[in-house]
Image (cartoon, rainbow, N blue to C red; front, side, top):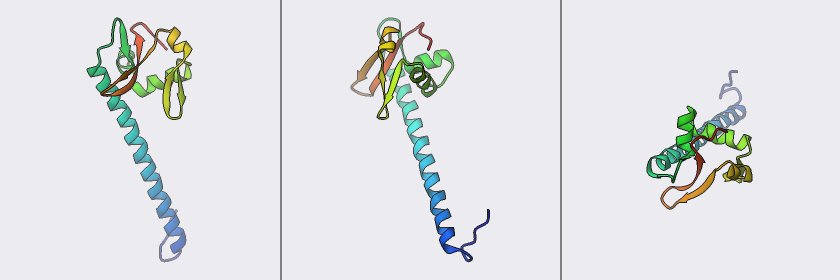
Length: 118
C-alpha cells in the first residue's frame, strides 16, 4: 500500500502513528520477555535449592526448553495459574512437589522435583 503525505496528509499521519505504536508495543514485549528470562537465569545461578529440587530455569534447561516455554506449559497443565500478570502455584503444582519461594534479592520463583515432567 502506498500512502503519500502530499496526497492525503491525514491518512499518512494515521498510518505513521499506527506504525509507531506497533513498534513501541513490540519493543515493550521484547524487553519484558528478555527481563523475565534474565531474572530466571540470575535466580538459577544464585539460588541453591534444597534437596533434589530445581528452579524453573534449571528444569527448563534440563528439558531443553526456554524458561518462559516451561512456565507456559506449567500454566496450561494446571501446575501454575496466571493471574494479574503473575504466576501462582496451584494445588496440583504443590501436590506434584512444586514450591513457591521468595528471594529477597531476585523476587519470586518456583522449585520443582528434579524428576518432575509437566
